[in-house]
Length: 154
Image (cartoon, rainbow, N blue to C red; front, side, top):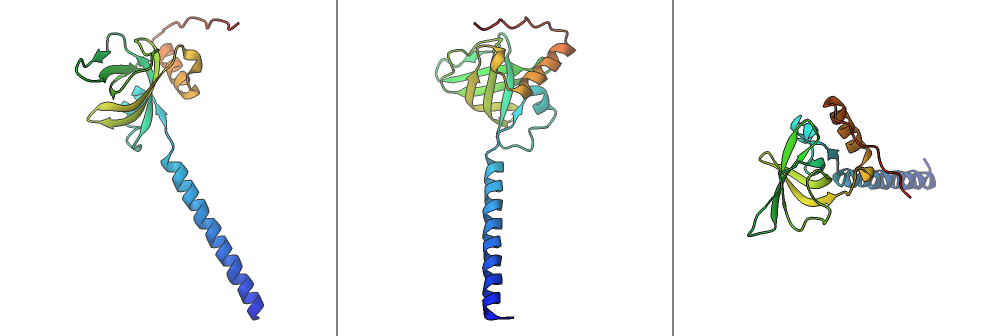
């Protein structure tokens, strides 16, 4: 084999190796930053065991909000109609946070309690992610809950 041809083969091999390393680093980085949205039923079924951090979506159960008077800790329960899951959050809650409202909390499970690092509250169900909306619709259909028709937007 000629020296020029050997250099070209080595150069092509190095370029392919660099592309493979860059691609694998990108795939690894993206997989570590993904955040999955689960409902309380899915969490209690064990689907959250594979995730270090995930999003919990559902409705705030009525009468479940308990504020600690000496700190910013708030305990509440999230439900999807079938199951409930206790949530613990330390921080300032969004203004729209209240019972019977959709909520998405980011965090992790710790001793049977979802410890949230971020809580997002929605003013209505029109902004709910598709996966959560489908899971809530299934729970409502299972329990024969009639949802009011959405109001038309002007």
